[in-house]
Amino acid sequence: MFKDAEKLKQLNRQWATVVLLSNWSAGAAVAGLSDQPADELYNLPLFLAYGALGDFLIQLNIEQPYMPKDARNQLGNRMRYSRELLNWRDFDLVEEGRKARNELTHEGRLVSKQRCLQYIEGIESELRAWDVVK
Image 1 (cartoon, rainbow, N blue to C red):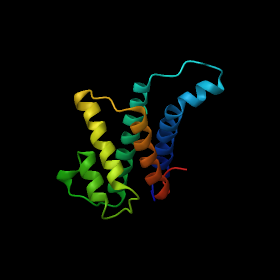
Image 2: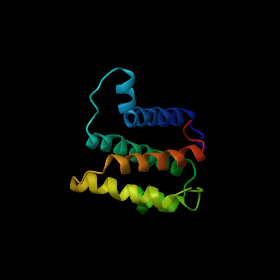
Image 3: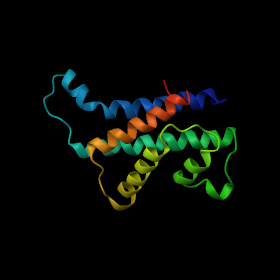
Image 4: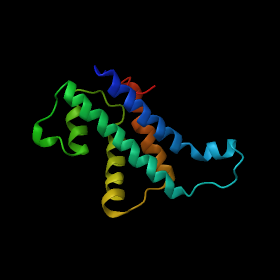
């Protein structure tokens, strides 16, 4: 989807970090550690996942302009305008997660581990469908 191969590699590195942090409890078990991370810590990969999605949509707009200049500064605008260009599998889930991420960012309202993982999986599903991450 990207013409800029370096940006695509960068996005895949970002996503690998999201996956690593989302699966840290599994990694701890493999490493023989008995302590599970606090559920609240899953908010970090949630935040990073929406950062990766935002970076993807910014790069997409650079390569295939799809939104007016005054709408580029907010992830919600980027997502909504991208619906004309991208085939979203579950836009509503990713949008719900974006709102939860905003509450986390602006109000300090934590998202449950279960919801964090659902939103991350939703973003991953979209990025895979668009052949952005492997």
